[in-house]
Image (cartoon, rainbow over all chains, first blue to last red; front, side, top):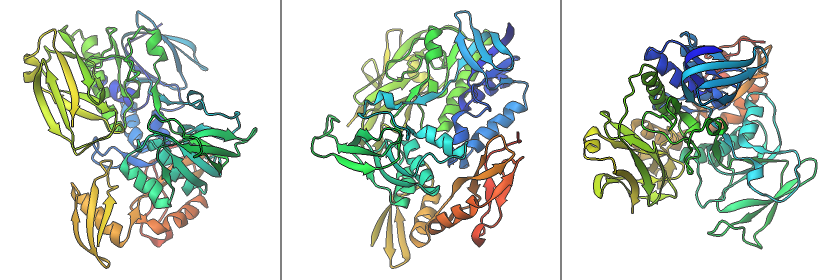
Length: 417
Length: 120
């Protein structure tokens, strides 16, 4: 058994930021366990730029953003195990992992940070008719093939889902010589950033079809084509609108799911909406000493916010390790009227610091107000030009606001049109 | 004439309204920062983009290493740049910032590595 103060599960941007923050706070023995060959997580394959504008004030590519944290980790005495898969986090914070060098490893931790990230929703979750030919994969899988393995997975491509990964891959495949025929989006709006629609689709004349989905795949060994159809307001395909498109590759960019198998086994309570752990403002789960941050907690659109969130978790873990974390009176936060969820789900009303509540809306709103209220009293109300499901928003809660609350209060975030 | 653009300078994506007289920009509205103004003006006169791709790597942990253009390149030169980059093979080790193609197509922009690979 190896003894550590803090075990961080996952060496992506979340895990690295949490580990570095804990180190900075004076935690002595910290270890990061990473499943891939290198630190960096998904950023390693996100070779496009757009990362770091908030945190570093400059525009970096994914590997460059990760590189800055990898360098910092290397300059500390944080231990790193790569190629190492965590199998279990026990009730007593024993983390069991395996790799092909050390075999089975067991780490006894005082605190654990869960930073496993998320994975893409696969084809199996979509129920598209057709057999299982080669050429159908998630956009992220294609991204790894092209950017890490130097391998082009197809020539004629259709992309289902207009989230940022789908849009980025439309451009990437085009630049490498593939013909991207169309990007289909089930919803009446794109889930991706406007700038990506401009510079990934419009720049290359790739059409974006909204309210449209793939209803059937054709081909037995290799994909030969797909049938797309328009959908109605209830997102059901409209008979008679089917259209055949010849292609050898279908990329799916249809959502991300936080990877919480380990959290579930560890007895950590999950939020039904975010699919991530229920946490308080220190990013501590309902299991004392177990923290969560990054995409395993909630899917983010900007890595800069992942870093910010993970530093909070790292600080929380350090306070826990040093016994500085006091109890408190925790109340719930809740999203209603267009607000799908709020993270953190619990807030300590005895807290003395300003904190941010992050949330996402369920549909596009223009010129609406974001209202925060508690016990019938409006705490803040701010007008927003635009609110979209693809963009995470936040509201600030001040210590003065917290002082007015009691143990039965509930903080509500809602949209007012 | 009024042209509507979406700024791509940062993830905010501000909707910008540009008043154009022939090839001259008369006014820029809707941007929320200086970079938006710059973007709108170059987008009308000489649209540019930064380019990110990968280059073949010999003896590396991976067969390719990601690269980017050190500055913006004209939009219509994208595919020519891709051709030039795809004809190059570099050798490991490589580190972030290493120049892979100097002054590509004489555009005054370098292609630089954006990840390191210490080799096998």
